[in-house]
Length: 212
Length: 212
Image (cartoon, rainbow over all chains, first blue to last red; front, side, top):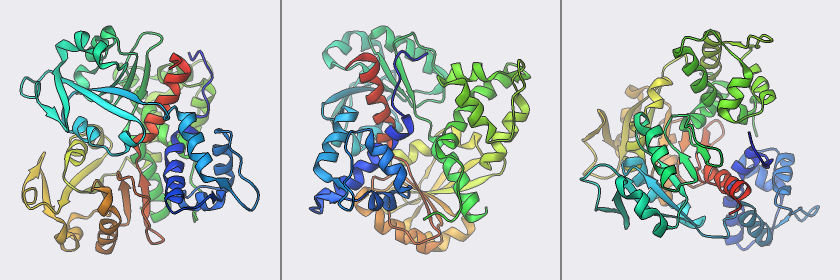
């Protein structure tokens, strides 16, 4: 049960793509951008764009549109991306490496400060300049890393055990890339990233639009 | 502009997580599962669950719930996951490798049949049994691979050029893991996967629920 009513999650999910379009407009020197242009770029209905962006407190002006710089600041502020965030990565395999190299995260203020793994071959190395520590050491390492957010990329078979271990060590938010529905104590946030979600949308679009 | 009205995309995005919960119930031998139980597992409102699942045509019975086996079949059918699908991966780096090893895809009927890259060191090798071909050969290779869906994992700087090349070769749907808003001809489907979306939701949850 949620303690607080969160704003619409689909709207929040769309904000980063709005940010892309609006930042491109900013780079092109535009002062204003219309909801209709944003809608066309993102293949959304204009009414949806206006409704989504209202969440930031910025309202477009008729015939002029949204003030670009102000809207960028408002989205950053709404998402708390105007502050720096630090995360650790649990598991140091291909997905972890891809995430450590994902160019969007640093742009959004997210730094992946360390990875943890149980594989002695990986421990002690670094990926993209980020150190890989032994998972055994997480309790000792976590305070200095100043991160309460962990990105979980371990095999599904050990996901629940590892989740319990890192929560015990002080992690209070888990971005879960495994396919396990984690059981966690009250107060711990879990956000599950299921790539099948994108594939589900794609499957329906391919059938509806291509008839196959 | 869309030619066809698609069903609610947030609902479609949630179907894979419903499938997880309902398949677990199936493995445990349950014949029926209540909307309230599903809602609790996924931290959703029961009314949302009933509304989402109605899209499959299956309606729960009062006090009994949804018929588990029938609901699984209905979700598979709705997503067209009751048929096999084949995709190619463009780029053969860490993200591509992680996707080729992602255990959910084969379960959902998706087979990644080949990867394409420009790096001569990668070309000719195989990842998890999947061959890596030269991107130059895509036009010649594509017909035999029988895949019109490409997963784009190349660097952003070349994403638009590569998209044009693979569309020219016959790709009609792109699952775009780059951060570029691709410009494509009418009739080509692009589904953008932006990991910042999950991070946006997580940022808001952390602030709202943990006050930081």
